Length: 77
Image (cartoon, rainbow, N blue to C red; front, side, top):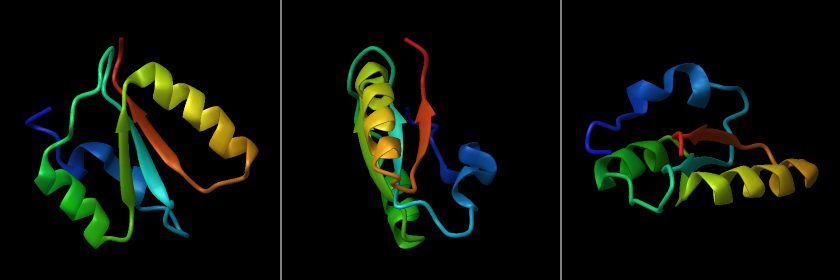
Protein backbone atom coordinates (compact mmCIF):
# COMPACT_ATOMS: atom_id res chain seq x y z
CA UNK A 1 0.00 0.00 0.00
CA UNK A 2 2.97 2.31 0.41
CA UNK A 3 3.13 3.00 -3.35
CA UNK A 4 -0.52 4.04 -3.49
CA UNK A 5 -0.87 7.49 -5.06
CA UNK A 6 -3.78 9.27 -6.73
CA UNK A 7 -2.03 8.72 -10.07
CA UNK A 8 -2.63 4.95 -9.89
CA UNK A 9 -6.38 5.63 -9.96
CA UNK A 10 -6.12 7.02 -13.50
CA UNK A 11 -9.33 8.73 -14.60
CA UNK A 12 -11.36 7.25 -11.75
CA UNK A 13 -11.42 10.51 -9.79
CA UNK A 14 -11.52 12.81 -12.80
CA UNK A 15 -15.27 12.36 -13.26
CA UNK A 16 -17.69 15.26 -13.55
CA UNK A 17 -19.29 15.59 -11.11
CA UNK A 18 -16.69 14.35 -8.68
CA UNK A 19 -17.61 11.21 -6.76
CA UNK A 20 -18.57 11.67 -3.11
CA UNK A 21 -15.86 9.25 -2.08
CA UNK A 22 -13.64 6.36 -3.08
CA UNK A 23 -14.37 2.93 -1.62
CA UNK A 24 -10.93 1.41 -1.24
CA UNK A 25 -10.95 -2.37 -0.87
CA UNK A 26 -7.61 -3.31 0.64
CA UNK A 27 -7.66 -7.05 -0.09
CA UNK A 28 -8.45 -9.79 2.43
CA UNK A 29 -7.97 -7.52 5.46
CA UNK A 30 -8.24 -3.84 6.30
CA UNK A 31 -5.06 -1.89 5.74
CA UNK A 32 -4.98 1.85 6.14
CA UNK A 33 -3.95 3.77 3.01
CA UNK A 34 -1.03 6.19 3.25
CA UNK A 35 -2.05 9.49 4.86
CA UNK A 36 -0.60 11.40 1.89
CA UNK A 37 -2.96 9.49 -0.45
CA UNK A 38 -6.00 10.29 1.68
CA UNK A 39 -5.02 13.95 2.05
CA UNK A 40 -4.47 14.31 -1.72
CA UNK A 41 -7.93 12.94 -2.51
CA UNK A 42 -9.59 14.96 0.23
CA UNK A 43 -7.91 18.09 -1.14
CA UNK A 44 -9.74 17.39 -4.42
CA UNK A 45 -13.04 16.97 -2.57
CA UNK A 46 -13.16 13.16 -2.66
CA UNK A 47 -13.37 11.23 0.61
CA UNK A 48 -11.71 7.85 1.14
CA UNK A 49 -13.35 4.89 2.88
CA UNK A 50 -10.95 1.98 3.34
CA UNK A 51 -12.16 -1.53 4.20
CA UNK A 52 -11.41 -5.10 3.24
CA UNK A 53 -12.42 -5.85 -0.36
CA UNK A 54 -15.40 -8.05 0.56
CA UNK A 55 -16.88 -5.32 2.74
CA UNK A 56 -16.18 -2.73 0.03
CA UNK A 57 -18.01 -4.83 -2.56
CA UNK A 58 -21.03 -5.14 -0.26
CA UNK A 59 -20.95 -1.42 0.51
CA UNK A 60 -20.79 -0.67 -3.22
CA UNK A 61 -24.06 -2.51 -3.82
CA UNK A 62 -25.84 -0.77 -0.95
CA UNK A 63 -24.58 2.70 -1.82
CA UNK A 64 -25.32 2.39 -5.54
CA UNK A 65 -28.84 1.16 -4.69
CA UNK A 66 -29.19 4.46 -2.80
CA UNK A 67 -28.00 6.19 -6.01
CA UNK A 68 -24.91 7.60 -4.31
CA UNK A 69 -22.21 8.91 -6.67
CA UNK A 70 -19.14 6.88 -5.66
CA UNK A 71 -16.16 5.07 -7.18
CA UNK A 72 -14.31 1.98 -5.99
CA UNK A 73 -10.85 0.48 -6.25
CA UNK A 74 -10.74 -3.11 -4.98
CA UNK A 75 -7.53 -5.04 -4.44
CA UNK A 76 -7.80 -8.79 -5.05
CA UNK A 77 -8.37 -11.17 -2.17
